Image (tube, rainbow, N blue to C red):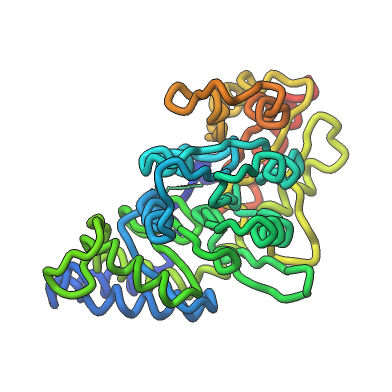
Length: 377
Ligand SMILES: *Cc1c(COP(=O)(O)O)cnc(C)c1O
């Protein structure tokens, strides 16, 4: 059996090496390192793939979130509702812009923002909702868009973990995650489902005016050379990263398929295991692209399981071990522990197993057997 990795970027690279090497060399030869033709071509190709009018490449997924919020004209004091159970970047940019983060609990089945909790948190100051498509699974966008419309709120999708996932709406219409709200952000961090070989990110929107505003914001607030109309930032995707992404984008669907296949194998192996709750997989749609394969374990010392797996050469992760509302930086007396029963439980019982495009059957069998033996001992 090959050594098990949490993420196997080297194995994935081996299959696309020629194309990646050639396109990186081409960037070096033509020296258009910033805003070169590769960046523009990637932007167009991603717009087509997502079926969205505008993709604005930028430096990373955190910038993408920040710039999206700046583009919407959110003002200090505006309240922005997001999930308590996610990576800190989401709440970080809200706080950085002097907006008021309002963390709410999540759903125990899909780990995404809880609709009833969002509704309860809406006040006259609320301006936006930021659903995170956590672990690769789309949030309940029908309900979120309905709430947003009713209360006149913006929806910013944090799509860092779910690029390529398809959301099937109540109307039967299929849309890619990140093209449903007013604007979305994504990350091309190497371990993401579409990752480059460094940092990268992008903003998506179907709104022409917003796209124009954001294109200026990522470029020092310039809409005409050396005319700075708004305070902007410097956030660019560099051409070498765009070249890598162009080589990988045509493979994204097959990468996501490989993740879904691995997820099904895990879940089948855990069938009938009373102490293991497998992630919710919906049969009829592609709403989950398994950025992570995350289990919940019952009546089991989760941290001891992590140690046991590691001791057996199986890397694993705990995403996330601390609720955002309990983090030093984001604590706030407005929060009440009783409002976060699900997140407070998830941080104790979740565990993410190795998930990538190169997992082999003997590896999956070894991982599942090791987990099952431990929880039943
Ligand atoms: C990775 C991630 C980000 C941040 O992306 P970076 O490119 O690392 O800045 C934001 N939100 C979520 C949910 C993420 O998983």
